[in-house]
Structures are given as structure tokens and as C-alpha cells.
Image 1 (cartoon, helix red, strand yellow):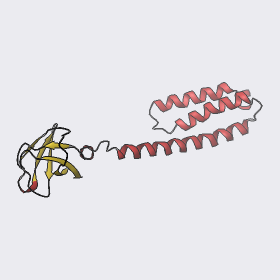
Image 2 (cartoon, rainbow, N blue to C red):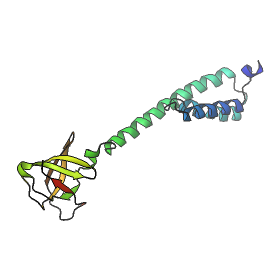
Image 3 (cartoon, rainbow, N blue to C red):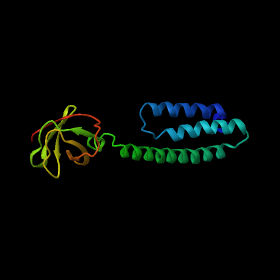
Image 4 (cartoon, one colour):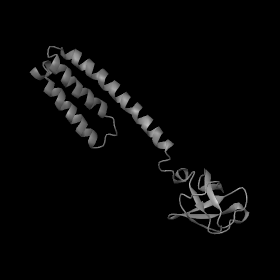
Amino acid sequence: MDLLTHITPYHWFALGLILLGAEMLGAAGFLIGAGIAALAMGVIVWLAPELPLTAQVLTYAFAAGVATLSYFHVLKDMRRREADFGLNDVAHRLLGHQFTLDVDLEAGLGKLQIGDTLWKVSSAAPLSKGTRVTVVDTDVQTLTIAPSGSEHSAATLNATHA
């Protein structure tokens, strides 16, 4: 029963490493705060070995909660930034991309081969072969294109009729 009344810094370090090891097995971030708090408690108990067990446990619980909430707050911000970059949204990443049409787009509608994907494209007016265009908007799987004012092209791609 001595273990329940006298916890050493090594107990906290061991608990922290166990929790972080369990996190690596796939806890989806829920054990990171608890593991970090346990390691911090190891340092605190190492610096203040006379700290009573109840104070250690209460401090650990508070620190684990704060660390876990902080982690998920940071994670939410990272996910928001990923969304701003258009991660997993290929159409969004094509915004601003310039190319030269290889065929006419009659009635402003057609298809465009970009890499291994055939995209639907639309423009406000018909466009002729050789026109430099820029992707200006996306709607689900349709790219809206407009004649480009720039003389340099980021890439030259093939367009085909609808």
C-alpha cells in the first residue's frame, strides 16, 4: 500500500510514457494531453517531493484537462488552415490555373483534360482554340473559365468538346 501513499516522479514518468505509447496505437489525440500532464507531474513531483498525493492527483487532473482541450483547439486551427489550402479539393486547387485551349469551346461549354481527370468547363462566352484562359470559379465538378489577361501560362492543357 506504500505505492498508493507515496508516488515518486518515476511513477508519473512511467504513466506519461504509457499514455503516449497508447496514443501512438490510435487513440486519435485523446491521450496526448493526459500523457503530457503526467510527464509534467513527474517534473513537479521531482522538484517538490513533499507534495501530498491529493494535490498531485488534483493538479494532474486539471493539467490533463487543460492540455487535452489545448491540443484539440490547436488541432481545430490546423484543420481550418488545411481547408483554406483546398486540401482534398482538387477543383479548388485549380483556381487561378492558366492554360491554352487546344480546341474551340462552342456555346462556352466543353470538357478539359487535366492530368488524368476530364473536367466539365463553362465560360460566359464561346472560346476559340488558342485562347489563354484561367480557372476563375468552381462548382462541384465544373470549372468556370475566363480569358486570361496574362501572356505566360502556368501549364498548357488539352480541352475537348462536350
